[in-house]
Image (tube, rainbow, N blue to C red; front, side):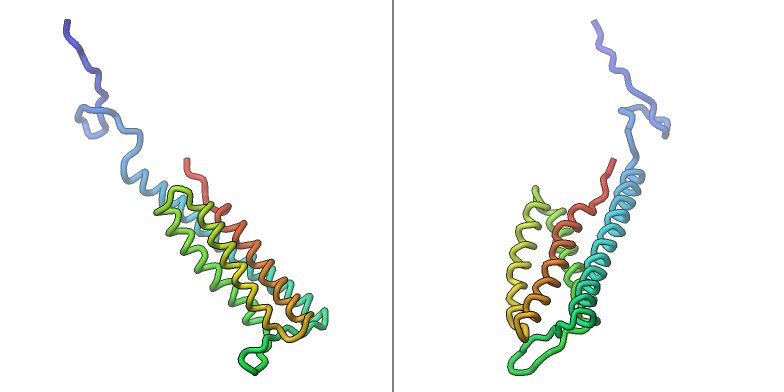
Amino acid sequence: MTNHVTQAQTPSGSFGAAPTATNAEVATRDRSALSRTGVRRLIVIAAAAVAAIAVWALEDPLGGVHLAVDSRGTTQDIGPVTVVATPILVGLAAWGLLAIFERRLRRPHRTWTIVATVVFALSLLGPAGGVGASSKLGLAALHVVVAAALILGLPAARAKTR
């Protein structure tokens, strides 16, 4: 008795196991998934910055709470440029760390969430230097809003691949 192996003819005309997708198709699909993920993560970072400026506007100009920190004997005002630039820079750094974790770790989102939560907790030392109780609370609120947006939003923004 003879065993016959049925093989499919590939598009190039040779015989062998028929591929489900070419390397180029897989690479294109991967790039588009990364592209969707990138756009979604940029939106999360922008949303964190918008949320921060909204909280700042409610606290400082509208609420009358002067947001400032005491840094080595000098008072530093916390203005709109700082409030917008900080979440963008922190968000980009967070995204970079998350991307490294996604490429190298088995459970990247869990690890990233733990690391990001520790960094957030440490960041609350900054508002402790606020000038007055209302400034400290206002600055802490900014930290909470930005941390919530980034910690919850960045991992969730990953595009689903087929």
